[in-house]
Image (cartoon, rainbow over all chains, first blue to last red; front, side, top):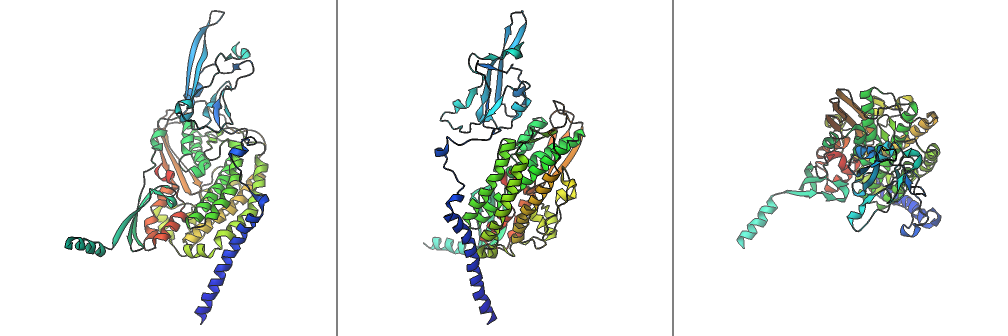
Amino acid sequence: MKSIFDYIAGIFKGVWSLLKGMTITGKYFIRLDKIVTQKYPENRKKLKMYDRFKGELIMPHDVNNFHKCNGCGICEMNCPNGSIEVISDKIITSEGKSKRIIGTHIYHLSMCTFCGLCVKSCPSNALAFSQEFEHAVFDRNKLTKVLNNPGSSLVKDLAE
Amino acid sequence: MSEEKKVIVELDENPEYIINMGPQHPSTHGVLRFEVSLQGETVKYLIPHCGYIHRGIEKMCESLTYPQIIHLTDRLDYLSAHMNNEAVSLCVEKALDIEVPERVKYIRSILSELNRIASHQLWWCAFGMDLGGLTCFFYGLRDREKILDIFEESCGSRLLHSFVVPGGLMHDVHPNFKQSIRDFIKYFRKKLPEYDTLLTGNVIFQNRTRDLGIMSKETAISYGITGPSARASGFACDIRKVEPYSAYPYIDFKEILYTEGDTFHRYKARMDEMWESMVILEKLLDKMPDGNDYTAKMKPVIKLPEGEYFQRVETARGELGVYIVSDGNKTPYRLKLRTPNFSNLFVMNKLTAGYKIADLVAISGSLDLVIPDIDR
């Protein structure tokens, strides 16, 4: 007799526990103000990443097309995956001294693991991370980027 | 015709049936293959086959400098990236005999505890989903997002942070750091009881986990099980208590221990750890010194003196040991990682023998395996 009673009590307890769980889901089903999801391609305009978000490596240039990179190659040395290639040129300055400047700063986005060692190790703060996160392209050659703008040069106060 | 009949008879007489669970199976949480021998629906024995995601991280470390190694350790157990980074950093600091600033110790411990909560949240999502409760996945991820936002604000990335480096931190934490964690604790204290209502009290969940896959304390010790899985069997193995590191010696907290050792209590141990982690976080935040020093003075090229060094930390899944052999160069001669999941995996055969194949999913879910950590 007792076992039958336990059996029936078990059924009711089970149904009660399920209903209790359903109250949670039901509550969020009704409360439309508690929706946390966002529709991604539609909210692209107001979607803002955090300032420190490591999106993509860039070399910031000022309005006069000056950057801070002197082509020392420390970022290349510190990169664990070989995703940075610095090709530097030698020029003769007006005083007759030979000086190293940056030729091309190549960045392979496809090999980058976003560890941030290049930005941390750069002695002249020439590199930074942008907030760009949409990296998908149709051709993988587009993932190899040249960071210094064409015609750009080292900022004057650093060069002297 | 008669030959065909004979074959059918032979198949019927052979009661053992071997199937492969994985390498692509939703409840193995990665590329892990179980060779399961079945008799009817009952598991006779189980052989785990790993190596599908072996990347040779230990070997790769031998050609990288110590700061470069950090970003590889993220990819071991990607759900406890902070603890992995901390393990290598602590080992290097131990070898160089460097004392990091007090503030750095506190920040490291705070981030580790946040990471532990985030990891257990994801485990809760996945465990609920393994047992058929899809709703759990949405609710767990909703709250995990809050932690990932804190990480993104301070560290710059959500999952693989590479934030703890030998000598301190990559950069200082965000000014909002303390406040956003306090807000999160306030928020999560309200939301965590929902988890209990939704899953812990559920009758189907209880029937599928109670008195299932019982692991005795002796088994846990002899198989080298660590983390919440072992603490559910009564094995006090919390490295934060046994061998305190970073800021853990400065605060008082309790170690979650259960003696039952079944699947349900492995679940309970993790749920209680989330509560306890929030208490630890509050204590650490109260004691955290002000200032802006985030790194000790380090040489630009780190070279460890010749010798052998070992450091262990408590990750979300158990004990992670880092063993570095240095020959005085800027790269290690050998780096051995003792990962928690590798040991936790091989108890599966003992736990599942005699149970049904549906219980296998519940038991493997309760061990909280992360496959890249097994293969590394």
